[in-house]
Amino acid sequence: MRIDGKRPLAGGRALQTDAGGNGTLLTGVDGVPAAQVLVLGAGNVGREAARVAARLGCDVVVLSRGSERLRALETSLAHEGLRVRAAVLDENALCTAIAAADVVIGAVLEPGRLSPKLVRREHLRTMRAGSAFVDVGIDQGGIAETSRMTSLTRSTYVEEGIVHYAVPNMPALVARTATQALAAAVLPYVREIAGRGMADAVRRDAGLAAGTMVWNGQIVHAGLAGDAGRPHAPLPIHAEAG
Image 1 (cartoon, rainbow, N blue to C red):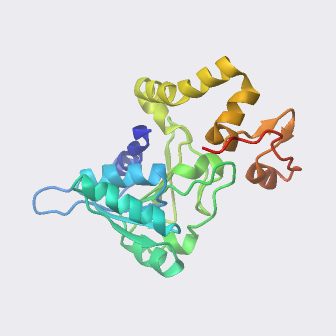
Image 2 (cartoon, rainbow, N blue to C red):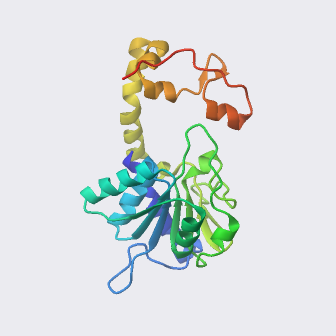
């Protein structure tokens, strides 16, 4: 959903001095460059964060372990007249990009699994004091050693000199739009389940099958079972191809 694009705006808010930031304006002004934004991850959330940051005029770098996703992201944004720099995520690339960034957006999400801890304290110490780190993966534990969940009323904290924003339900700030977007995305599945029953709906839709976590009291998603330390049972229904 396009609501994912709110992440750069949260980073811009964290850069303001009343939040503990160093007073960098995300968009810049005449004669002063816009902020440098690093997006970790090139999935749906990362792609939308990169799009919004680029539209705001930011210098955007995207790192991901998936080279195909990076190519798709660059192509998609180029068609919109937007330019980002994309590179494969490794330790050297991460160290270089994070040291130069004003805002880091952690958008590495693995459905049904805890977030990988990609950002270490020593990475954050190379950033300019008062820079911002937005951890989108906080719902699944966060991608930084320093990440801990915040709330809408107390959304930031400073650690290692970096303003952390780690609200688990950021779309709640724009609740009307978020609700409409969520309803539009979920309603087709609800109709299928209501019309066909759960078993037939899962059988006919590979996406719905892949998103099924628990079936008849058993964990059928391998990632969830592994992270929870519980037994994994295969989904007893096989989705039809195509």
